[in-house]
Picture 1 (cartoon, one colour):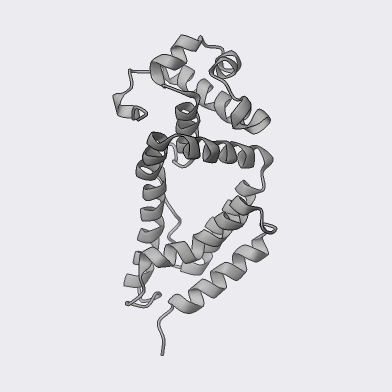
Picture 2: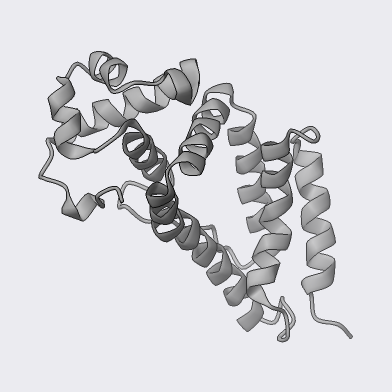
Length: 199
């Protein structure tokens, strides 16, 4: 299993950022199969051993690079909460559409997907440190709306998260159709119609 960040030796932050940036850039340029520690080291301007001291594999480097993308400068993951659930979720979904249509982001994320399929330990770390955390952040935003009376009391919030965010990711993963703001809006309207209080 890949070491967690807390378990890894102390790292020079400038070198760490250079390595993570290089990993994302190269994954976007050449894909996961052709990605290598040697190429990451050359792009980042560090030695291979520097990378191997901090990460056990190219998959672990790429995972940390994607993990860093999901947090703000304070290391937190948040969703907007203006009191308007529909507007807040539309903001998030439209941002997701832009990300998924960015060629570099798309190829980096597909590279990570390949890595997760090949490395069971990395997949477990992904679920623990990214997927579950993001799910809880989305669920917290829906819970806030539920407490405010904007979502029915009997709604299963875990299922609601999947209803709102799952279709975009499924379409991206399977390349089954265009990923557009209009599609995101349709998903959101349909989901919220089923989540709002009745009567």
